[in-house]
Image (cartoon, rainbow, N blue to C red; front, side):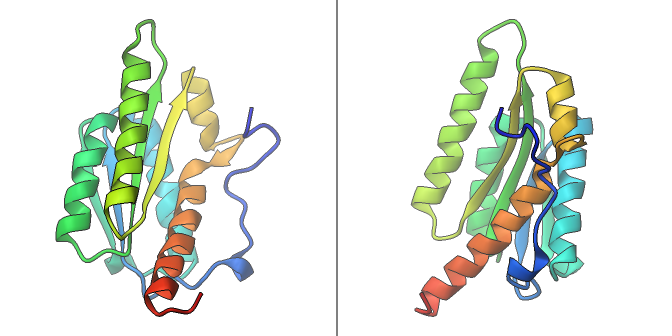
Length: 167
């Protein structure tokens, strides 16, 4: 398991670009709300810790993980953001619904990254059990939302450096 013996909330602030000048969009699924709220709180806390201003964090809610794609697309098109983080949680059940949702969301977020000049960060837990989701949204493995926020800051900085021809 990739997160075994790894705390997703650990990062070295000295290696993270200052996020003060960046604007972040965060789209949060309401499905499995206990999990997605934990992920959102981890992401927001890390963004603020790394210098982001509260007024530069825009949050939109959607009903489920499949709807993350549409909302992220609209945020990329209609809001002045440097990066979008999509937060969701899909927990395996007894049917193939899990497979279809996970595949669709994964491909949709990939398509946003290919088709838009701003990064979209994938923070959708795709776990077999509720306990695995709890462990990764503020539990014993830390918080995948924190990890997504750090990735968002780094990708926003990369995009800005590319735009300024600094890499």
